[in-house]
Image 1: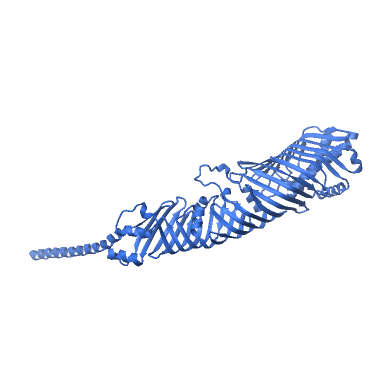
Image 2: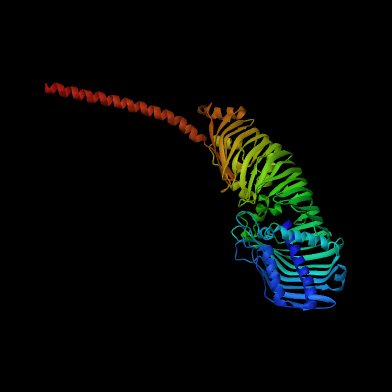
Length: 615
């Protein structure tokens, strides 16, 4: 970034220097072609790039020296191979007052650039074409620039107006495919003088992938006398229409930029607004070989649901509206981030996280929240979470530890389910991808553990199901009404691409114990489970009194259906049949063995008689 600022300022400086040269030469002798040839040779010597000026240089004289030309193009430096030009400008116009030059002052009336395009490329080594251009200069030229800079400090510089119109900055990836395009409709600066404040305003658009957004900014610009320090006070910037989810980004406050030989320092204190939600921000960043980012973010309240993509089932979801986060990934790959996040209330879907705090850091394109702490679901949670911005869709990894939470509140908040309640602990080590809850569930992988106490299953009354089974009556919706209370519930959790299994499910209630395994498929939103019921107390006595053969037996219990309509069944009749079937099978075998013995005896008698007759 430092080199880019330096290069752009150098471009403007070259224009001013060109005006000075023309001012001196024009008094004695003027030859447009000769001046263009000299300028082309100088640019070639310093940058190895080819400069072309198609239009004639036109001059105006006293009291203002005016110069105007157009059709300016600058090729890539010789070491950077590409068929795209580095820079092209349709029109360049500038004016400078002649008399102040005698005292060493420079009073520029106006500088206007219109129809400009700058193409930023990178080679496979990660080097930009701007770096190649700047590094092409030899030490002699740099020494000359230093002397020129020192000399310029002896005089004052002022600028009545600077106007940039229709300026486009294109950024290409390593394969020279356009990744984003920054367009400036207009930039207006008036009454500019170093060491003084000048109002500035600009507007334009930003295109990334299939999305295009509009931006604008205004503020008070201050530039140091050495042109290495910049401040923008009262900054008010806004980006609109970035995606379906992120409609507006605003930035306000005070910004400072200082450029040294090997690094550029950026500081900002103010607020960033996401869809109108203000977040206080303190940013200190250094840009050199790596981008070192130190940021503190805080907000009283932040709602995240509006930033989540619409689920696949929503017809109004637009794929074209999906946010392209590849620029974020590319930025993080060359950055070292550390920071702190503090939010009073963080709202996600129907869940509220209070007293949120998180430490921020990155490793490549992955941003870590380590640890992330919050009060939620009437308890507390702590986790290490990470987001991989290079993955498509986003890859999320979490290792949450929920302590004394109401699990029903969690399920209702994220999955809109009110089927389970209970106080307990949930420990997970999970990875997933997606931009909404449903997509994350469908890509869920990992393991965990669930421990609940004093809870209930809503919508299923297992005791009522057992009573129905006792009378062998048909089941109906009434059979599923009510709830099943329990004292304890526990199970390990395994997830594989949205198939979530509870392989060692155990539930203890006052009237029965339930042991078995269960699963749910997030892709189909279905339930499945096979359990064994062990009856206790009065219910056990009632069942064994009516069915003595079931004494000491475990009843088969099956769970199936969908998230919205779970169904359960107890096949007592099948158990009884199985009990009697065993005795029937024993009697059948006994009869079969007896028949075989009798047949063997008869065959033996026939065989013996035949032997006697043969004698």
